[in-house]
Length: 432
Ligand code: 4AD
Ligand code: MG
Picture 1 (cartoon, rainbow, N blue to C red):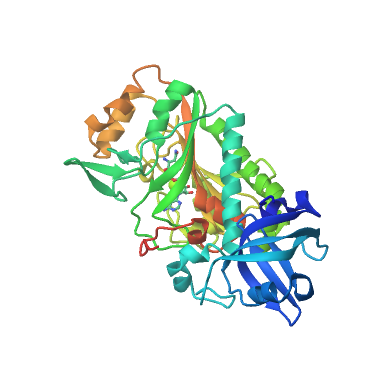
Picture 2: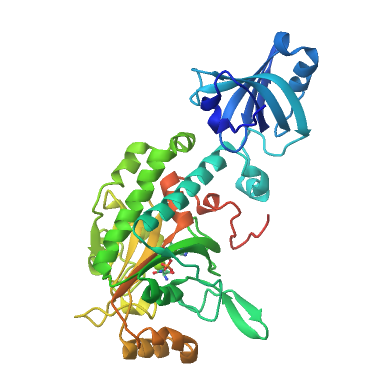
């Protein structure tokens, strides 16, 4: 007998099959039991009729508890009443693993309780839906960049340098020397772009940020493309095409997950329309000042209320262009006619989700980069390989980083970034 996955039920109508599953929920009367079954691919209903299966199997069904694992035998049938469209008429049940007093019941639980039980919470339909969307975003990312001939490059996780500033670093001992967990693969990707033209990485990054907000993780995954012979203007087009592609892929392939999360498709549809609006940092400050934000002056970084106000002024994700040089990293290209700003942009997601992309054109002039490294108090020797890139065939190049969990949080329409990571690392949490 063939063992199948629930998601493939439609290919097996009328067949007797086996399915390994967990009991998510159960209802029963004297003669019939309804099992809500999940196997990780989908949920559907199993029906046990006493008259058909006999007393012994019916008693097993009646005594199943939430999250008992079972091997089910039965016939796949159409079920026009459920959205999934199929059910299984159960003929046999083998209990694989008992489950008693499962801590997460269908009633409401507090967040801390759920976070303490993250290893079990992941089994719930809402978490399942969020992870489906995360998975789709990962799949679509590879497809988007592979179609455009980008080479996937894996930068190191253990590094000797700190591209995004020296304060948020996780330090570790490297055989008597210091090493740091990567904050961004960018500098290595710049080297790779000079070898392979267009490259991208997709991997974990670490920030020892003492931020306790709904947008910050300590460990998060970043998608970082780096493109040779590419200006910032061209990079912005890649960025908006990529984000619209992610949204469209979720709309196309995550129907059930969007339903579970109650995400309004009409809202997401707007984000597939290009181009996205752009506003300069200068104009953003003016916009804020004109609307009662007198806590921002030119030169300040934006806080989340500011980003949210700017985002709410537009219908789609918005690019904020050319921030002050003083609040951005050393590697950004100087503006051709202005001393005080650099060629960069952040993409701010709508609906208050904040920055999802940070990117820039990179400085290509050897002397300029050397001077910036010195200004930032960085160790020149450690950056000597990075300076080599400006010595041997330097070209205009640009890149950006998209935070995976922020994109998942936004596209899913959920409240907090912690639910976008299977096992989130937060300032006060490393368990489980
Ligand atoms: O803006 P960031 O710091 O940019 C860089 O690291 C560049 N080197 C990227 C590049 O040009 N290759 O980070 C990029 C993105 C942010 O826009 C945000 O989406 C996400 O990474 N991010 C975080 N996500 C979750 N928790 C945090 N603590 C994050 N910090 C940044
Ligand atoms: Mg940033």
